[in-house]
Amino acid sequence: MDERAGGFCGVVLAGGTAARMDGIDKAAVELHGRTLLELALDAFLDADEVVVVAPVSVPTQRPVTFVCEDPPRGGPVAGLLTGVDALLRSPALIGVVAVDMPRMTPATWRRLRDAAAGRDGAFLVGGDGRRQLAGVLDAARLDGVRPGLEEQHGMALHRLLAPLDLAVVPAIGDEAVDIDSWADLRDLA
Image 1 (cartoon, rainbow, N blue to C red):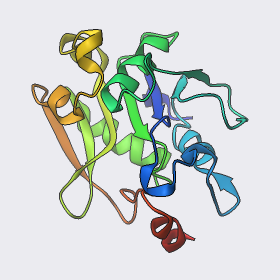
Image 2 (image 1 turned 30 degrees about the vertical axis):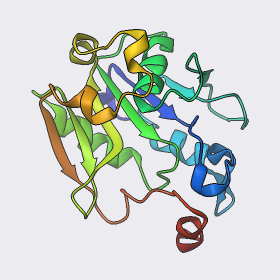
Image 3 (image 1 turned 120 degrees about the vertical axis):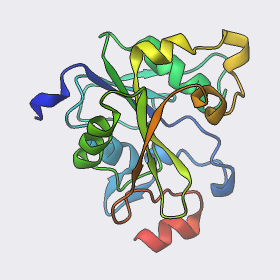
């Protein structure tokens, strides 16, 4: 356990529609004999607590809290804020990741937390320059930009994050890979 992790909690977004994968529950998809949810939880090794925003679908070894946004399928902003509201602790930093990013590791989260020092947060950026749904946010600053309940459903994540001072952390290797299609899964296998 990384002692620098004090006050770090995680939110795994796993309640999406997976439209390009025939609506399958991505959390239950296996890669090398492990579910994508297990891989996401492994990456949050240093987190004090983890909330999974999705219906309970996959058993976990690690104790986690499962929650769903209301109404369901409200998008990443609604999922993130629902996950934050379900945390039992009041962390200084909140990590958020999409369940379909199986190459995230505890070292990735450490780099993101280090980059967020003195800023409002930090997000992973892929080789194509796109910000990924993997980053850390200062909990107090996130609370300061929180939209109303009605506004957060369907809101684009970039809109929520726009007023924040975020560091950009280039992915190392295939950390930024996400599984959006069956071909993506096949290419990782």
